[in-house]
Image (cartoon, rainbow, N blue to C red):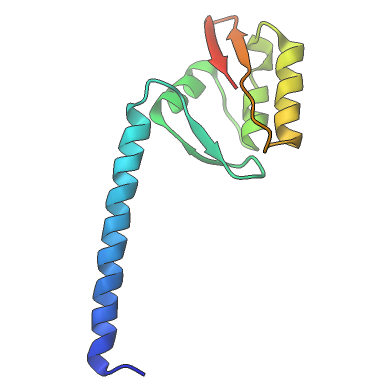
Length: 117
């Protein structure tokens, strides 16, 4: 068991580590937000954990709203995709096998854009 002063030293160390981690989070968030690409991260179940500013702007532009998993949100714009059947098949494949890498490219009809999923 430590002395009465050891608790304040441990608390100070913990506060210093927390401040360091908060600084790192800020730097990483700045790097993600400065990308021109829309980036989102999910957990293994597909729940959205983080989206950078370009991704949020694209989602707003495309009218992506609502809840659910990232796949559910992406499927909400299925009617704007040029090759809808391939898009749906890819999204469902990603839903069932999230560990499999994917490098698919899709075209949005309006506004015209190409993105990778």
